[in-house]
Every structure is written in structure tokens, then in C-alpha cells.
Amino acid sequence: MITVIGSANMDLVVGTENFPAQGETVLGNVFDTVPGGKGANQAIAAARLGSDIHMVCCVGDDMFGTSIVNNLQKNHVKSEGVGVVAAASGIANILLSEGDNRIIVVPGANSLLTTAHIDAVEDVIQKSKLVLIQLEIPIPTVTYTLQKCQELGIPVLLNPAPARGFQLDMMPFITYLTPNETECEQIFGMDMMEALEKYPNQLIVTLGSEGARYFDGEQHVIVECFKTKVVDTTGAGDTFNGALAHGIVAGMELERAVRFANAAASLSVEKFGAQGGMPACEEVEKRLQEASRLS
Image 1 (cartoon, rainbow, N blue to C red):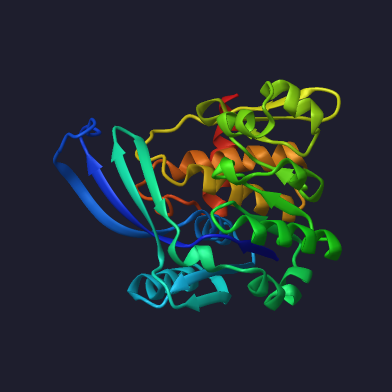
Image 2: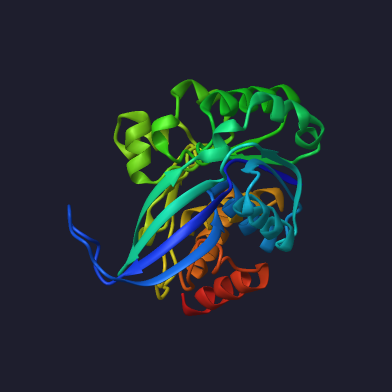
């Protein structure tokens, strides 16, 4: 069982031929409302792969909140840990153009996920094989959760996004940290290679089209990505983290788990929306097998 503690939003997605310049108005060609938020995205990514997922988050007492909870349940994510609060649900304004995205997040109810919510689900955390958490919820709640997990002996995978919320004194409480290259430099203030060597088998840096890498204590391990046709990159990182959590709990060795996560992420970008392309386990295994035959 995996407990995911994090954000749950409604994504307001707009597609356009070109990103507008400062002060410019352009015409869009797509608009949709799609459930998102890093926490919910990662929970659904892992659930679609077959993991038993419990979600801990806060949503507003509005139509977006109802839709978010319904979507979690539809995707077989257990929602007993979801708190409904007297506030607007979080939203993300996502602008898409030519396979790239620009995102503005308004936290809303996510800002009201407190340490009391964590205490209320302590029994769920204690039964978990892994806790997956991000930084779109209040940092004091993240810190409290890390300490709680250490007390209970529960491993933690932390995706440090947005990176500005990360604190170096969190590292002793984290089993796996998964920044991208830019986030890695922001967090550690040093060259990526140096940071990897400082945190062997703990720091896993995602590199987009170049895959991911970590240091195993003796050598750098580069896990290559998979060829894919990009439609929408939104949610690729969340798919990677959900799949990595799934792989770790399933008992995969770290290199195999990272490769599994890369394959899942490569599938996720082939469809529209953060959750739209998140694959089932069979699809990931098929991609791994196809890549193996071609190598």
C-alpha cells in the first residue's frame, strides 16, 4: 500500500498555436477542465499501474472539489483521507503550445492541509510500504509528515516540486528524492554530478528526454528514456514519480524501478492531459519489452 500526501487541483487547460508575449492577446484552440494537482496525479499514476493507493489531501466545498473526489474514486484511489474544507478548491491554469506548457497554480484548499490531517491518518501511514509526497502543500505539513514517517519507520519518496519549498534539513528524513536537473541545482547549489555523489541511491535526477540518473555508491547509473511521440508533456513527471513508487513497492531493484518509471512517463506524453495518458502496467511492460527487442 502507498499513501500519497499532496495536492489535488482542477486543471484549466488552454491550448494555443503560440504563447502570448507580454501584453499580447492570442486565440486559443482548446479549453478543458481536467482533474490534476501533483498529489492526485501521482496517486492516479500509481493506481493505474495496480498499486493500492490512499490519498490524503484537501479539496474545497465546491463543484471542483466534488469532481476531484469522484475522479479519484473512479481511478480506484481510496479517498477516506480527503478533507473537504470551507474554501475554493485548488486550480492550475495550464497553457499548452507546441508540446510545451506554462502553468500557474492557485493552491486554494491545498493550503489548508494541516498537521491535524496527518495525525488523523496516522494508522493509514503506519500500514503503508511507502509515502509519496510533494511540495504543493504547506511546508510545515510536509516537515511534520517526514518526521512522522521516520518515527513509524515508513520510507518516503519526495518529489521536490515546486523546488523553492525544499529545505536541506529534510534530507535525513527522505528515502528517495526526485528533482529534475534544474530543481537539483536550485536545491543543492552545486553541480548535479557532485550532488548525486553526495546522496548515493537517494537522489534520482530526471532529465526529460535524456532519461534519469543516480549514483549507486560506486558509479553513475544512467537510465535512458524511450522514443515517443509527444502530444502533451503535462504530468510526465508525476507519472514518473507514481510509477517509481509503484516499482519500489513492487520490489524492483532501483535501476529497474527507474527504467519502469521512464517507460511509464514516455507513454504519458502521448495523450492529452496530465492524467489522460497515464498507462496501465501492461502498457509499460509492453514498451519495456519492445525496447529490449530493439536494443
